[in-house]
Image (cartoon, rainbow, N blue to C red):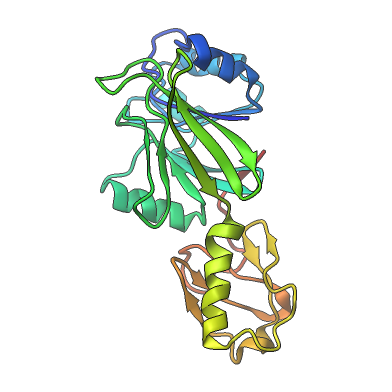
Length: 253
C-alpha cells in the first residue's frame, strides 16, 4: 500500500491519529506533499514509516529544505507520480509539471482540500491535511496496485471513505491512445511488435520504420524516435534531449 499525506503543520510530532496513523505504519511507502513546519515533525514521520519520501512546502524552513527536494517523482508498481507541494498558476501549472515529469498523476498539497481533479490532461490528487482541516475535513489517501495502475481512496482519520478513484498507468493512459492514432493514420504497417515496450518511461522503436524520425504524434506529450532503438524522453524536455542526458531523479518503490 502507498499512503499519501500532506500539510501536517506540526511543532514536535507527526500528529497522526486513528486510521491515518495505522495506514502510515502499515504502508510500504509514505509520500508527504510538504508543510511539516518543524524538522522534528519530519523526523517523526521518518521514524513512523517503513519507507518515507517527501517534498518541502512553503512553510518549511532551511533545515527541512536541506533534507528534502522541492519536487520528486515516485514510481509505485507501474505508475509514475510527480509530487510537489504546490505550483503558482494552479491547475494549469500542476498539469504542466506532471507532463514534464512524464507522470500518470500529480500529488500535491497546500490547499488542505482533499480531492482528485480528473478534468484536465492529467489527474491531480490532493490528499488534504490529516491534522489541520481549514474547513475541508481531515483526510489522507491510500492506494493499492491494480491491473491498470492504482486504485485509491480518500479516507478520514475515523476510517470513513470520502472518495474512491483510480489512476491509470502510463501503458493504459498514454500508449493506447497513441496506438489508436497511429492506426488511424496507417502508420502501424511494418512496425516491429515490440514498439510499445515501456522501459523506465521510455519507448523503443527502430527509427527507420518512421521515415526520417521526425516528431510524428502529439497526444499530450511529444514522442520522438532515435537510432539504435533508444527512445527519447516523452516529457517536455528541450527537443533533442536524449535518455542519457535526462537527469530527473526518480524514486522507484
